[in-house]
Length: 150
Image (tube, rainbow, N blue to C red; front, top):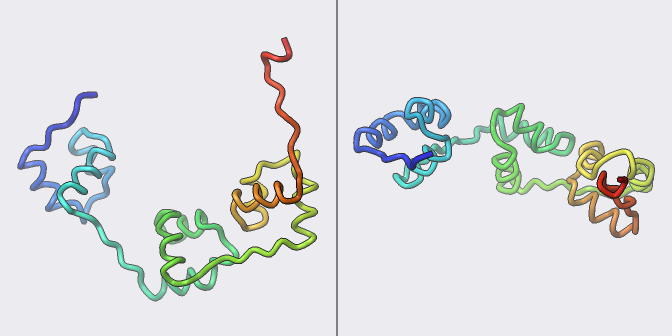
């Protein structure tokens, strides 16, 4: 795909509409990629700043221990990264405690579930699960390739 040339008219249109329209809508209008629109907005210094209100902050405070960032993002109509950044700004951290039940869950599901699936079930991250599995010296058997079977 050839590189998009941004005309002065295009830039003016972006400046007038970037707060009212989504990047996807702007990309469709220009026949460009969303990344191209985002890059042009960045070059022009036009950034949408969405403010968090007290109601959203309270919802995060009440629900962050029980829901993943992905679930919170879906409910608040934003991105998981925005949720993570807001939790950090509010000083909210999930402190996962590895109970004996959680460790037994890892042992029982090591061969049935991925690290991500176990993390979702335990309301922690896949990285946390991976690290705990290493500390517990638990490993999955190596995968057998189809080429090895022939």
